[in-house]
Image 1 (spheres, rainbow, N blue to C red):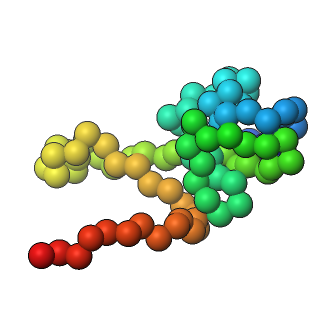
Image 2: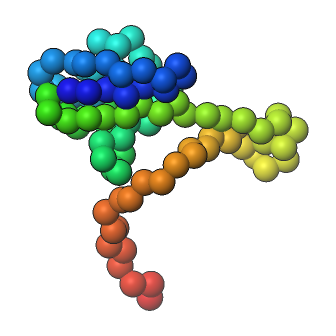
Length: 95
C-alpha cells in the first residue's frame, strides 16, 4: 500500500494487507500521534487496509495555553486541519 506521510512530506510503500496498527508499528509511529485517512474517511487502528489502498498519516496537533485550559477545565486542545467526510450517524429523536 502507499502510505503518505507529512512532516516531512514523503511516500512509503508497505507490502501486504494488514491492520492499521501493524502499519504504524512497522513505520515506528505512535498511533495516538496521527490521524489515518483512506480516501476521505478516518480509519481506526483496528481496521484492515489492503495492499492496493493509499492511506495518509496526518499528525495530530494540540495547543493552547495552560491558563486557557485551566479556566475551561481542559488539559489541552487538539485540532485537525483538513476536510473529511463521515458516514451519517443515526440518532434517536429527542423525547
